[in-house]
Image 1 (tube, rainbow, N blue to C red):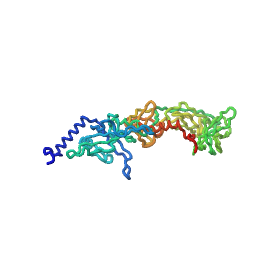
Image 2: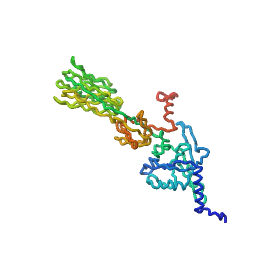
Image 3: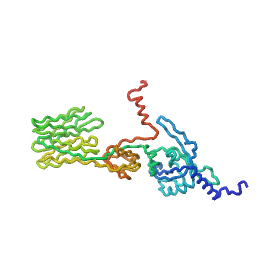
Length: 459
């Protein structure tokens, strides 16, 4: 007989002994890593390719590090885009421990999220605590050592450094989740933390310009033209107005002409001259009121704060005469009211009307956003994840946006319940821990500027 008759060469007891010895060795000589399965969030319907995934579970697992001399792979490579890290790691884990401890949890999950639960899968990631790094499993070797006593006992995970691509990483372990805090496509929201409602008052007069009528919007303007109104009679107050323009393809035309001061003392309608701006053809007329009081000017009492869009303006109704309602609108400078223009001065006021301006979107922002929580726009419905929150500057950095946040809408944290109003939503930029494409391009432009001329001559 060729084989030793005192050994069965593959009995269940012998295999069990080998497995337990391996498990014990891994617990003694191994490192406790965190195994994080990849869950598929969205697949295309045609060829079933995965378009987005998430990592929101974690399992502590002992593993032997086969790279006893350090990371394998190509190492750190200096490219024209910065440092490129090609570190690789080989980990050996117990087959029995994975099948008994991790597989039952994976089997219970949705089949669309977890398509293979019986063994470690390519695409899953492992957190390696000694280097505080995430590694992605690229290949699982399950036949090495090759069938000792007729069975395999370990999985050999061949991993390379994880390249983050805006996957959701929310394992609830801060040490793991924060490894990608400064990576990916990150946008920033400038939020409004405190606001106050603006106030305004009006002054009445007679013999004023009630409204300006645009009879021709002109053409060819490259900037805002000047509106001149003829002077009032002696003892009167000169009216003044500005043009509100619109632009198509860089060419301006006049949309409306509004009053900054309706004037007083006019007995006949003044003439209106529109000049400058590089265009021509615009013309306007006006109507005046000599028998009734109307709004001459609206003055800002408190410019308010926290506005992201100009507020609505309500003017109380006139009480006598023709009873023509007045209308006005405001413009902003930053988050404050800068100017109020009168569209129609109205007629029939016996006392100065009450001017009411709308409140800013939020009077007081509350709470602090939490790293990795979801935030939702109250109007747009846009959902994103928090990267960082600076309460001093009111800058919220977010990623994995599914849309655009609108200025003026509320952003609400799903976990923290923090609530702030959006002032601006800045553009997306890619943040990578090592590659420095943007920095290199910026510095290169300072050396050679091809937009001016070819520094190497013309051929």
